[in-house]
Length: 278
Ligand SMILES: Nc1ncnc2c1ncn2[C@@H]1O[C@H](COP(=O)(O)OP(=O)(O)OP(=O)(O)O)[C@@H](O)[C@H]1O
View 1 (tube, rainbow, N blue to C red):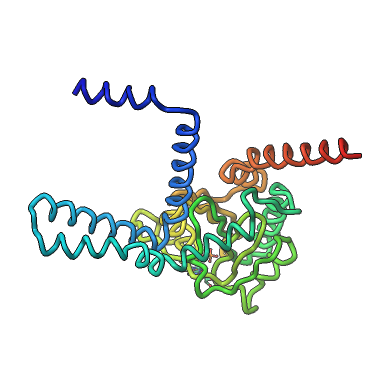
View 2 (view 1 turned 180 degrees about the horizontal axis):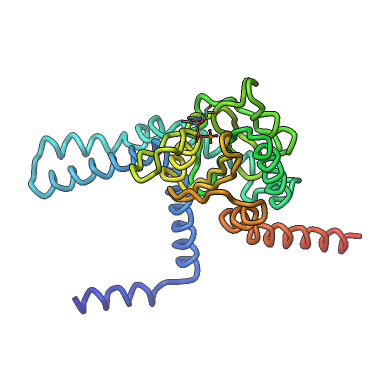
């Protein structure tokens, strides 16, 4: 026990600054990789791989030579299998880095985008037009956009209202928001199966609650029947929200203050650099 601790202390003492940087970078990489994979098909594959690893360890301990031989040969081609299996995720990840860069930046400020969404929701609620708007947070919602109509359009009051006008091609289903963009419309979401949800809550609300249970997304629901606005967060439904409460909740839940601070700091730095050049 003490030997182990001494060994650990020895390692820590012999560490240099580049080792620390190395460890931090690997930890950040693993964190983003897991964040990217959670909620996607990749997570199930990863769990399957860990199960295989576990089997391999058991085979090694029990000296099951045939299984050991199969696994030893499998690992050598494992990297190619991984690339083939994770091909959609790798493509998506690389495309995302290209699309947004490391620091997401859009001409539309985050607060302005939220205000447009709240104005659209209020407009729709006043006219009893149903709507379902889902905000992506850290878990990628790409899996839920299959079968939707891809839009990749900047958020605007006019566009949001047009999407949900009844009897138009996009009004059915949910809209998915990522950063300051409407990525897709007419998305079909999983319905909650929580038995505690009151029976009078319909499918639009159930779909909003469902996505907030399966992922960390937030769903804004405008009721067609009652003209009220609700938010589904972590499987809970916050009903009948007025615009101010809704705004405060969204700003808090989407961490917009923090993001705005980073954006403003970058803008200031850029401005300062420009002034220095002049
Ligand atoms: N799984 C789903 N994913 C996304 N949207 C859905 C889903 N199921 C239903 N909807 C949307 O909900 C609409 C039906 O809403 P319904 O009246 O059943 O629900 P509700 O929660 O009572 O809402 P409202 O109060 O607006 O009437 C559908 O027309 C469709 O647009």
